[in-house]
Length: 473
Image (tube, rainbow, N blue to C red):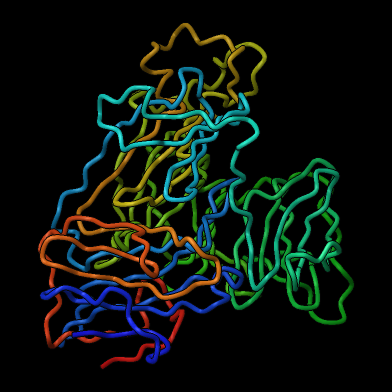
């Protein structure tokens, strides 16, 4: 069976070998600029079971957007295979405040305290060494992707403003910008979009929504936040921190979700209103929900992963039955629950309170794995004196990198912002993703082959609305 998404008249590159099932997808030319995310295709059995899915999840983790052209493919029955976890070690002996993102099919880990970047140059084993990581030269540092939507680029100004700038042409030296003033020295931790509108929330809890008519400051309506009604006066900015923050966002199951502090809850943004979501991780007392923050999120194998502070735990919502489970902690210490924030009151001299709180700072799908980076709270630079009550092994758990793996799940990075033809080849031994003639990613086939009775559909319960139109033959 040979199927295509998009223009049926375009000739195929490298026809598939005998026994290979191919789905070709013609990406819209503006897919990178639009950056909506969505479904590429799903393979569905005659009785309605989703057997495989490909799409683009749009995420934000604390300081950084995911690349708008990172796509994920997974098998519907991948959960029959065990999930394994590898400790990859610290990219640098002094790295304690680590954040990660994907760039050009490799993992970038940022040392926010010591102003360094590291690129993973090969997949590491449990007994990895520092040679697995390569420090990025200062002049070649990679900027993590900014949040974008429909040609608008979103950023902050340290003097106290949030910007949305539109460039009809990349060569335009004077872009059209909408600017919203915020309190000096405040900044946004998160961006997200729904229904064509973008929301951001600053570290003071200033909730701002960007619409076609420009920015508005949302007001609290008793449960959620929304722009004032038409004709009402603009809402004033907060005069002090409101006691809540949002750190992460994702498009998942057709919803735009944001991760909150405190409580570790998920909120839903529908394009006009930000309100509590009915399906958050069910944190038990041991997770100290009053202090929890949902700092990172990712879609891996169709499941929703949520990384939490202050004890470095990870929760997973299973796609097939909708249940939540606690994957575990990325830290082995402390084992006691008191104090709720690890080592509260015992911070090194000169560091802020809660400095030794434990963060899962980023969740990054890449190739066949889901990478996790860990961090303390704040910046742990090389001149901070190590706490004497922690062993070197315990200290090294701050700034560590972990890799989760489940067979049948593959992430690829598109190489051209202008879209183009993609090929998903499912062979008896190998599943590969190509863009034109370029191989983007491949994995061993754990035993999946489509049936002649399977159908190709343009919507999935994971990625939502289709990116393109499907044509079959």
